Length: 553
Image (cartoon, rainbow, N blue to C red; front, side):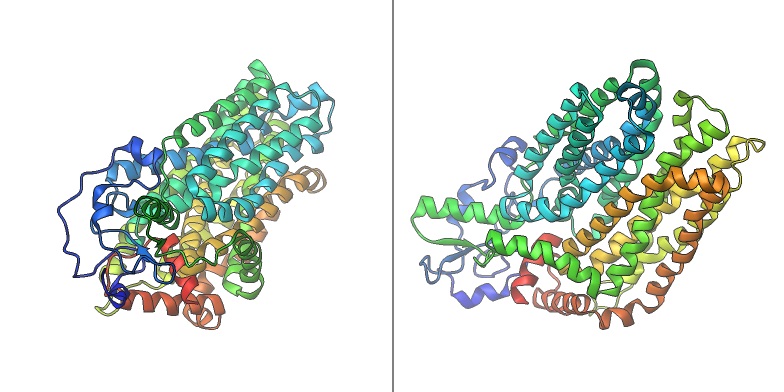
C-alpha cells in the first residue's frame, strides 16, 4: 500500500495525483446505460488501483478518483454532459411552466367551481410557495442519497399529483394537489443546478448555467401563450392535462440521467470494493460524521444564518425576491391591462407575454457573450491568482438594474387604450432582458462569494424569493382596483428604482463587505488554501469543494 502521507498531495476533488501511481492510458468511456444503472461503475482498473491506506478499520483505504477515471462526472464525454444539462433544463422548464399555466384558466375555474377570483389566483401563489420546500428538503436528501434517486422520485410524484388535478371535484382539491405538485417538482431548483456544478468547472460552467437559469424565466412566459387558447377552446381540464404531459415528459428524461454527485459515487464505490475484497474502504470525501440529523440540521439552519448575518445574502436576496415577485405579479396584472382595459379576448391575452419571452431570450444571448468577457478577466489574472473576484460577475446586473425600472415605468404609463399596444410590449421586452441579466449575475456572484456554502446561500435566496413570488399576485387585483392600472403598475417600478443601487454598491464595496462577513471570508480563505495545496490542479466542482471545505472548517 502507498504510504499514507502521499495522499496529502491529492487535490480536493478526490482524484489522485500521486506520482507513485503512473498515469494509465485513456480508459474507454462507460456506456450511458451503465452510468444510469450503476452508481459504482466498477471496472478492473478500479480494483487494480492502489488507494492510500492500509485497509483496516483504523486506517481504511481512502477511495478517490483514479487517473483518467471514466466515472468521474468532470471528465465524462461532452455529449453526455450536454445531454444531461438539456434534460435538467427541460425538467426545470416543465415545473416553471406548470407554475403559471393554470393562471390561464382562471375564468373557467371561477365558473366551473363558483370560486372567487382571489381564491383562484391563490393557485399560482400556493404553487410558488411550495418552491420554498425544495432547498429545505430535497437538497439534504440529495446529499445523503444522491441526485439521481431524488430526481426520479420527486418527478414521478410531481407527475402523479399534476394528473390528479384533472379529476378534481372542487377548488380546494385543485389547490392542494397543485401545492404538492409544486413541492415535489421543486427538487429541480436545487438538484438541476447541482448536477451542472458536478460536471463543469467554474470556467466552463457559465454556458451550461445559461440553459439552467433561462428555464425558470421562459417557463412562466410561454405558459400563458399556449394555455389561454387551450383553456378557451377545451376547458381547464385540458390545460391540467397539458401540464401533466409536460412534467411527465421531463420525468421520462430524468430516467436517463446518471448519478453525478461525487461524494455519493465514491461512497458507492467504496462499499463495492469492501464487499469484493473484504478490506475496509471509505470515500475520501466522506468523514463519517454526516448523519441524516446533522445534514438536515445544517440545511435548515445555515440558510437562515446566512440570510440574517450576511448583508450580501440579505440585501441581494431581497432585491431578487422583489424582482421575482413583480414577475409573477404580471400574471395577474396582464389580464387586467389587456383584457379589462384594452378589450382583448381571453385567448388573445396570452400573446401579451410574447414581449417578455423575447426579452428573456435576448437576456440569455447577452449573458452568453458576457461569459466571454468573464473568461478574459480570468485570463488576465496574475500568475499567483487562481480565482477571479466575485464582483466580476456583477457587470450584467448593472445594466439590468437600470433597465428594469425604466421598463416598468414605460409599461405603466403606456397602458392607455388610446396608445398602441406595441408600446406596452416594448416595455415587457425590457422586463425580460433585465430579469435574466440580474438573476444570472447575482446568482453567480453568490456562488463565487460563498463557494463552500453556495448551496445554503442559494437556498436562503430561493426561500425569500418563493415567499415574495407567492404574495405579490394576491394583492395585485385589489391594488389595481384601488389605484388604477397606471399607478398600480407604477408600484413595482418604484420598488425596482429603490433597489437599483444594490448591484452598484456591491460591485464597488463588495471586497470590503466580504472581509467583514464571516461565511464569505471563511469560504475565500479555505478556497485559497485548497487552490494552493492542489498546485492549481483542475478545479473541483462546487459539491466536492463544499464537502472538503466543511471538513476543514
